[in-house]
Length: 391
Image (cartoon, rainbow, N blue to C red; front, side, top):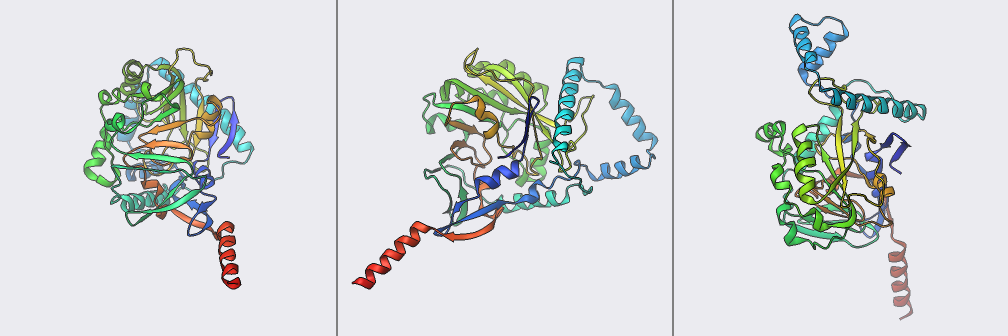
């Protein structure tokens, strides 16, 4: 189980543990082995700081800040969030404290030395360098078996979870490539929101960027035609008020979706500290949002509001934590699930995304248990040898 802790406030999830469970038994080279995902990508041991912030943190620890810095802090503190947003941040902070107190009591988090996440940063950089040349667009594929498998395509090896299907096409082609027959019980989207920082990164580091979309393009995705009549939709969103307003006032209404709940993904270090401080002024928060809605105004399942999902984040951009074990209590048995703008494959899911195979590349995994000969293959070989001896 990747759910390390469950309470009324929410869930603590291990993304790394979930990935390792998926690939605990993989059919590979006429046998089975266990694969482990690159754990260095999750070595988040401290808050992320820029080089100038590191020096600043050292200064603060010695209580010797400069006058200019004091002036800057004073200006930022004067720009308070609106009262309703301050109340929301406070609610999240209180729920987080309750959950972390229980988690620490269970020994879930350990202390780590401050290293500004150098190991994770290097692993992330290596990931971008190793996968930048992987241009696997305009592909369709599936693993229809009950086994996780390793498959070679275009002279590259990939690992595919059981019963998965993927489409590597532009989302604008979704009506041409998929059956629009209201078959999915759950649809998850991680839109490439238009973002200034990503735009700057795109100009500087092409390998670390992705194709962004305007909100006007997102409303055209035929969600209502893909979703079951009592299905659930969930959209990952930043804390941008413009993106949130777009979901509530444009995207959900255009899709025929009724808003039901807002959940918070709290990002923490290996020691259980938030990756940045809770902010009472406009700026970055240690969480992203998951906005949930249903096709029906009153769905069959009551989706609770304000839940927290706590996990150590991946160092790779948009590598979101899995929702499979969290969302299943709100879905029917053996649900049909679709992820749009997916970054990796999930067992039993249909996934759509232009970079969908990058996290499936075998270079991101290591063999943690040596391959064992498939007993069925061994029996077959033994029978063939016996027949040859008899003849």
